[in-house]
Image (cartoon, rainbow over all chains, first blue to last red; front, side, top):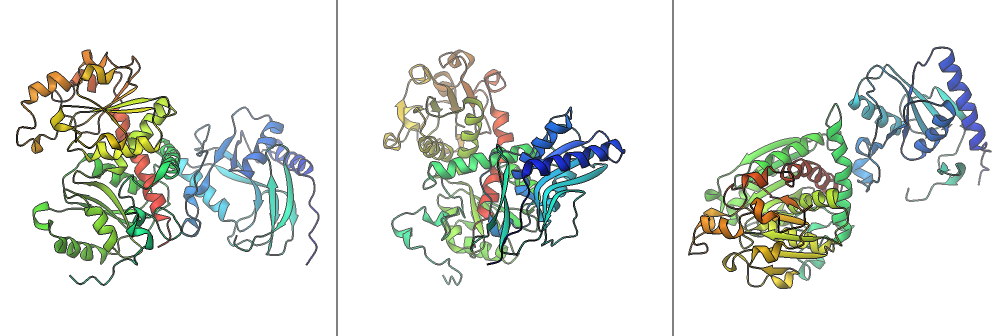
Length: 174
Length: 333
């Protein structure tokens, strides 16, 4: 068994993402951004960031189940919360937040869904963790921590309160 | 009758005729009747529908879930509302939709139904939405389709119309919340109504407080009480303290052999007028599966009045049909 890399505290990572985002806004790279979290881990991270950024508009939430490309194998699971966007996203700068960037398929699905609501000016991707294993040409703009993990390991984010992260061994049937 | 592609027989089928609705993993594969679904699946369908309703508020009213799949609306009996809402539901899930209307007279025999089926299967369909005037037609088709094909019953004879019952349950849940404290009355031509039969199964599965049927003796089946309903022949008694009134369409084409003296008399006794509506609870809602015979089972002022949710039923039908399609198509083939 290989040893797992160390994971920083989620609070620290959110602080560091927040400073980067604030800098991006200050430098004019992002103007009047609308923040959107991806259900469910991404929403928890986004809630923490949204609070720190003191954004006037409520947080948007995406539930990308209807956009997944693995619908055939995973099936449709009962849901509790549909997607919600608090404002028209046409021409807006969107801060898209997820907990872990892995294959990139979730982000692709999220972008597909966003474009069914409108045409944003730009999408800025924030993830708490970025790990190896990308299957699509997708990269994050702001990353809390980059982690190298064996293929049988996963980063599991627990939340919403308190928000914490741990590395788990992927279940055989996952 | 040579049938080469019969589904592998499900062992449970002998004891439970509804088992065919589920795949080997217990996942919903066909929706033929409410029976056998139980509260868990019914609730799961309603919850999923709730999520699909939000798709309607978007700029692009579509999700890519069933992209590349083909849904065939196979209608052996005419229908506007049901067929169009199934069509819209499939399109909102990004499926390709084919509408086939077949005259009933040419296909009443099993063989020709199978022939029709084989021809359409050859078009690589993934789902059949079937309406037929013979009870059991959708069930028959489900038993004979290729293993990857799902079958949805959009109304078969006097037997069942499960998606209508689900959308009615969905509409009631959205407005009234929990079923346990509710009194629901189904009024009119229960005898000929597949909608009523499916509703009775659905509402009882969802544990509704009290379920009533109201109508003349000739239009209420004798053996209906064991299904879990209270029978009333008097409208005033039947509507007392009721939260939900579901008017059924009087199936005028089936009124042979003196089942009904005259439509005028039916309207006088059972037609839902503003006056009779006052016998129910003040916040009672009025539903109708459509198409309504105004002046026969319902007064126009009631159908269009503030307590009517008839148009909401139609909108909700799209979300519920999206949910059923998506759930059935995510089953293992």
